[in-house]
Image (cartoon, rainbow, N blue to C red; front, side, top):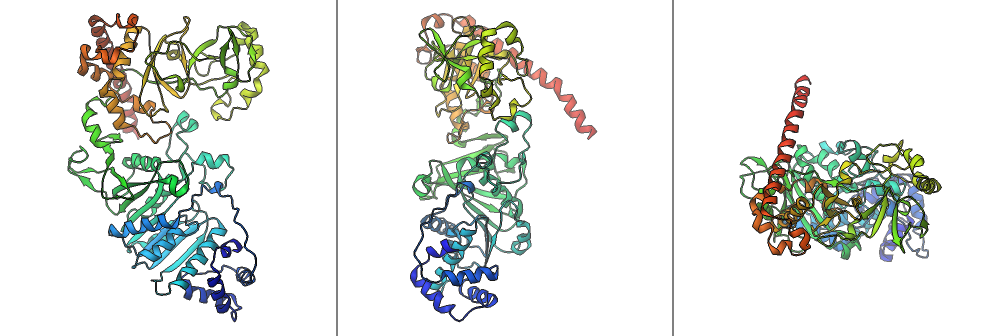
Length: 618
């Protein structure tokens, strides 16, 4: 409360001093505050009121040094909240009931009071007590300065958004035009866990990821996404809208999961704004807006779907020019794409890769396992020279190395302790005593690895390793880069080159096959397809799921030998490789693609009966 009163104007404080000069009782004070501000239960206890009287006495102002990272806090500046409310009003949204699930310092509540003339009730939730007081006094000051404003009945709950029962508001709001409005926290569940925050949902795999996916990252989720889904779960069948400031990745995730839900929402729009200007945050963000109460369908024109199909797409514009639609993303049939217009040109190639994309080696112990060659000696991450047998040392390519069509010389090397996941590492002591001594001397670094995937595994266990890792020829892409560039990674000194876990690759046994695949992947049709599928604001735009959608066989057949072998695509490869790319080898390559595709199809058919049987039994 003390901090909140520091932000109140002196004229407002003088008004309150005179108004409360003769009021000494808790109940009378609340009645007075209700009349002034519309806020129910302004003071929750008698102690709150007595503290208020004490703090009304003149005193020096104290700087606000509140640290809010634990709550993922980016307070909405008043000019932005007013812009959002003005846009919503211009769009025809004028609610009678407002829900603000994380109201913070009350910026949206204040802007809504000033903007929406039909507003009758406001319900807000906030866990941080100083912000609750800040909002109460800010609303009070607003009505003292502008007494003719429409005054809704305001209920502010000091509670954890993840524990608050929003369903108790369902019946209150069901027959009213409502608006869920706000700016939920911009952090992920793992970031809050790292801060030992208590402001976090009960730990759960809420998207039901299986096995390793849940452990290694897909089980992590954005808090803003979780809160939006909470709001949809409670209010989506009402009459009204949702409008929230969130990261673009949150909007993508919500839309991507919609086919698995029955939320009756429509008219999805993402209006981009400059988060750096408003929040000093280097992240792509938008105002996400949708309508409640119906799941609209399309006739197949805008989204390429069949008549009567759910229209699960989102239009993209800017908050400055909301009517100028720049693009649209979402579902085209059963395919999720980042740009529907661009996708329509290349959707023919969106299918299933005949070859399986793999992720590189994951070890989480780079200072010990990754080495550099300095003056013909191996040096680890501590700048220590390492004397070990060379047998388990392999050349290594990382994301930052994938910049050329052909990677001739690796920048680093890596110790590979297993040939497949789960293999025991006891053989190292028996066959490689110097390597074993080096690893044993640094055992604590392996023990300090935080990921739970290493629990119960061999002390020097790694992941992302298998027979595919030892294929001599690879074509690889960085998962991080914005441009989808592919490199050919040949063996080095007769050893297969490894990729780190930020890379994805296909492995092959011969140079000709890998060269054809490289040229196809770097061709314009594939590049266009990837641009229509990927969201460049994602931390990792290119994933195995995306890459597996490239039907290399279809692209190859469509391009043909002459276009693939064209100088524009192949001119960066050495002559020794180009000479092997003959028309006869091309026919063999197409046959190998078809054989792999047929094998995969037969395997799927073989697996299908068990799943059908399981469905019948259940």
